[in-house]
Image (tube, rainbow, N blue to C red; front, side):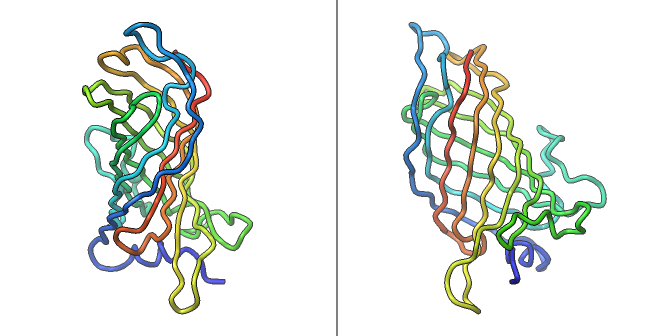
Length: 210
C-alpha cells in the first residue's frame, strides 16, 4: 500500500501551505495553584483548536531563535507551525503556539521507520508556548515522532493524515508562571495533510509540575 502522501507533496516546486482548523477534544485537567504563584501538579493539561501551516520546502524551520530545529545538512525536513485557542490549567482560556521540525531523511532514505500499520514514522522535535489572556506564558520543548495515519476514503481520492506524538518539557515561564516546571505528553493530529482547513487536534497531558 502506498503510504504517506504527505511526503510526496514535499517534492513539488515551492512550498504547500496547509491551514488547519482544529476541533477540541476532551483532555484530563488537573493541578492546583497556591495564591498567585505557579501551578502545581499538571500545569499544561488541556486541549486546543486553531490553525497550522506546513512548510514543505525541505529546508526545515530555519528559525534563528531555535537553531536546534534547523534541518541537518543533507537531510530533507518540514516545519509545521500551529497556533490556536487552548483550554487547560495553564491557559483557561488562552492560546497555544507550536513549531515542529520533521526530519524525513534517516537510515531508510526518506521513507522513515515502518509503524506496523502500513505507514511510516519520522523523527520530530519542536518548541511551544502556552499563554493566558493576561499574557503570562509557559514555554516548553517537544520531542517525539510524526507518523502517517491509515488513509481514509476511496482510491484515487484517499485522504492522508498525520499525527505528532511525543513529550513536552517546560523550560520556563513569565508572570505568574515564572519558575514553572513540568513534563507530560503532547499530541497534534491532522486529519488531512494535503488540504487547507483540515481538522486537527492538540492535546497536552501533564505528569508533573513545579
